Amino acid sequence: MQAALFGDFDARRLARTTDPVTSKTAAHQAGELAADHCAKILADVRVHGDSTVDEIADRLGMKREQVGRRMHALVEQGLLAVVEGRTRRNASGRQVQVYREV
Image (cartoon, rainbow, N blue to C red; front, side):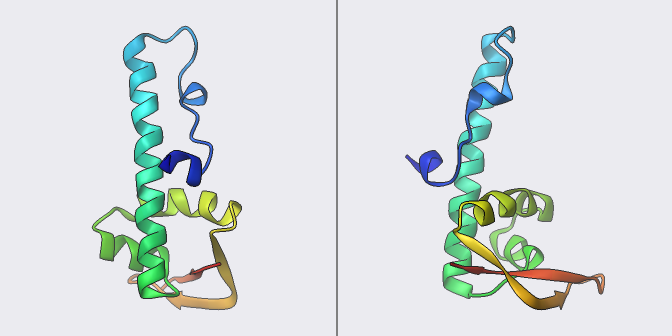
């Protein structure tokens, strides 16, 4: 159910038809993990409001790359949006986008 809410994480796109069963199982598990990450990210933004990828990753104990990888899907589905004209500095001083729940 969660995968349906958070994008088309179709395991068939992650494994070829010629791949062994173990690869297809791993692809299915990757889709479930992606949906779980999306659910956690969305819940975090609901609780904490406008946030950057780094802020979300820190609060959830996830890697920045894990969170960043899911943000595009959440924006594409209309669940999150980039706050236009608003950025924040991350730990390295770089200006980064701010996201909010739609």
